[in-house]
Length: 152
Image (cartoon, rainbow, N blue to C red; front, side, top):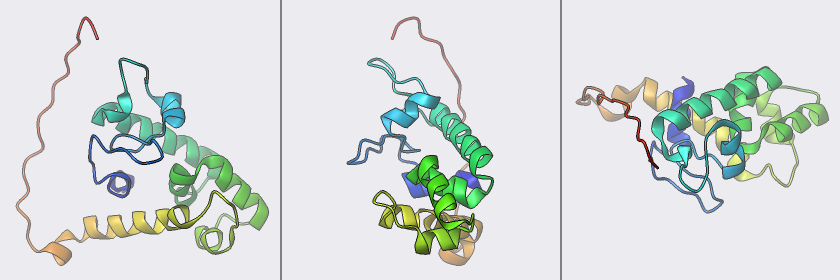
């Protein structure tokens, strides 16, 4: 189910870039990306679908270990784990609906409040695509192969 989060982030657009500086299909900010990916003047793994997906999985796993609920871990993907921990402490709850309604923080505004509901909407559409779009012709997944290059 969590794989559907990429549709909220970028609709799986590999070259997606936000005004705030997030990049790639999983929309990593440079500072967050450096915790999980290689980012330097030659390489930006935020733009790589395989590496960035692995990085997103590690970030979500870390968020879950810290926050102990998937709704909070997913919401923290957008607003940061420290902000969600602050919300839990201030409100005395891990209920995402309560946090969305009541948490007041300068960094927790429209996009952060709507991030988890947008994820649920993406999941609903993915799980019931026939209901929304009728029968779709599905292509086989593209094959991949990895190659090591000797120079950048």
